[in-house]
Image (cartoon, rainbow, N blue to C red; front, side, top):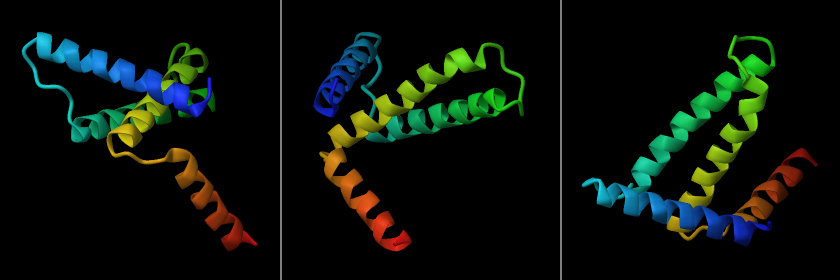
Length: 103
């Protein structure tokens, strides 16, 4: 799957979540809600990384790591979509800046 396909899939899942929230009488998630969810996922990811590296005890940490990375990717893809950010272009600019900085 390429980035455009990943982003389309992430958008479709976000749309399903929005419909689910509305059907349950709640508002769809705002970009702020998505960002806060992302922060929570990053925290979960950090704990799993610590466990995989032997610094924490979490059952099945190695098996759960991929799922948490995918959760974080989903959040980034949806936020980029909602803010109309071209992730490929931004990634290329960011890494080019690092290349210039590091020589």
